[in-house]
Length: 126
Figure 1 (cartoon, one colour):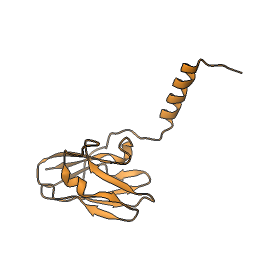
Figure 2: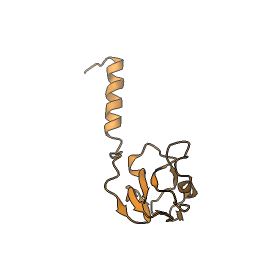
Figure 3: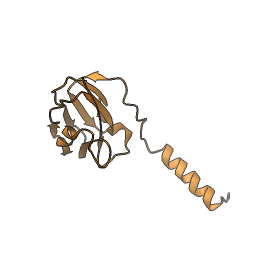
């Protein structure tokens, strides 16, 4: 039987827990020109969209659980309040952001799962 010092055991458990968490990298990939973001059990897709000024973006929840989509940063949600209009989506629901009129880049995340990388992304308004 191998005995580990309590600190070593704790650090080992933390490393194993982190590496098995299933959270993918936070890089949202290259921008896609679309006004629709679909949420599934795998996360949001696409996670990097580009829209024209004045557009709205529709979030569709095709996952079996609810999601609460909001603007960055967490928990203030102040960067792009138009995203906050999406809010809580039950499975099967969809909702649009407000009109995205200011040219800028807005980050989004699931408020209830803010550290889940595959539920984060950005909307670039051009």
